[in-house]
Amino acid sequence: MAIVLAGVTVAAYYQFDEANDDAAAREMLGIAHTLAADPAVAAALATPRPSDALQPLAEDVRRRTGTDFVVVMTPDGIRYSHPTPSEIGRHFLGTIEPAAAGESITETYTGTLGPSVRAVVPVRVGGRVVALVSVGRTITAVSATLAASLSLVLAVAAIALVVAAIGAWLISRWLRRTTHDLGPAELSRMYSYYDAVLHSVREGMLLLDAAGRVQLVNDEARRLLGLTGDVAGRPVAEVVTSGLGAALAARTVGADEIHLTADHIVVVNQQPAVQRGRDLGTVVTLRDHTELRALTSELQTIQGFADSLNAQAHEAANQLHTVISLIELGRADEALAYAEEELEIAQQLTDAVLAAVEVPELAALVVGKAAQAAERGVELTVADGAHVPAGVADPRDLVTITGNLLDNAIDAALDGPPPRRVGLDAGVTDGELVLRVRDSGPGIDPAVADRVFVRGVSTKATTPGLGRGLGLALVAQAAHRHGGRAEASTDAAGAVFTVRLPVPDQVPA
Image 1: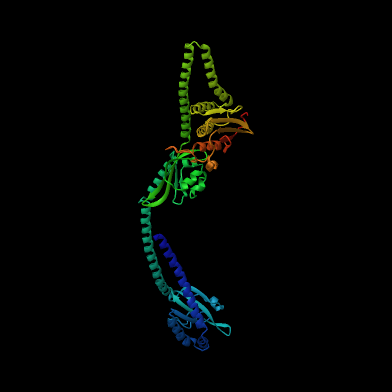
Image 2: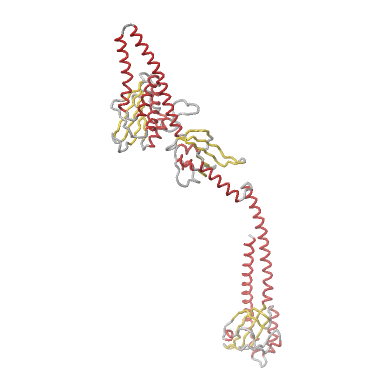
């Protein structure tokens, strides 16, 4: 700032110097014109000895105007007057040709009194140039006038420098306080480290300001939320269009809440960011729960299989004891008939499932769910002609869709009157795989009929730590992931859930 002010001061000095010279030239020109138009000058020129009248007149004008010389001369430059009387009669030093031709001029020239700013104008009588008048002021006198202006410039520059120094000091204090006394090098290094850490962690992070606008989002958060482009400064509800966006915009404190995005299941934590009592916004962390949820579903399915096998082992032991007892009683024919009948009943559903479902994982799931349903007093049947071709979709998504629909249907059937039934039907129609699950329960509550596939919507009791309303939301998410859709309705028998998935061209119907 000192360098800038010094440059401004020098520039102002040269500007004042030029303006001072111009003003002095204009002043000399004005005095010369006034004297040239004085009738006393014309009268003196008409006398035999013009110098006798012109010398005192010129000196009087010089004293009254504060100039250094007033010279009246012939058109050829021979002086009639001069501040130094010995110079009268001598030739004027300077440019007079334009003035002799009838023009007025100004110039800086070194004469008998030294360098001076001067003006030369013609004296006309009857339209003819009969004499010339030159008025001037030495450079020393002109510079003396500039000295007063220069003092003012220097004073203003000094005041400006003091104000600038105080301002710079205050700004420096504010910057130090704002940056916690960290200099540019420390800030640059800290930013580099923080940015590297922020974008390399496997946990998504989202920073929102107090108005709910996105201020920072790392790479993992972009992946989980499906964000593209620059989202900084935009409202989070506008950037994240799912139900999660509204939850984030509400700025409610939450820990390990499960939410669904278009393609992921995420665990969300929200905490307010407060510094020294000032609300800075909200810090949101996101963890990918998709794979863990899939593994949990598979584990639950396997646990169900284990429970079913355990129950069937007890049932098989009872049946075996019955057969042995019949043989011991000498009723071998009845024992054989009983064994064949039990085997046929057990094999019937397995054969139907294997014939209808070409996806091994899905077939195993349906058999296991049938065993679970039977233990709970619900009959699960597979419709005649049902067919699920192989390769129609990711087997894990088919397990997620069918498993959640069957679990909901079995629970719903238990809430209805006997006989309690759940039916599974599937087939390819118009290039779509249509999976349909019916139950004999009370149907869908009209209060939530249009929102059954929204995360958190459920008519069941909440399970601590897990929540409710996630199963059908996972069904809708898996269907959406494959470009399909999920539907729900109620008929005379109970609730009907239908999922439609587009069938790839290479999959035979």
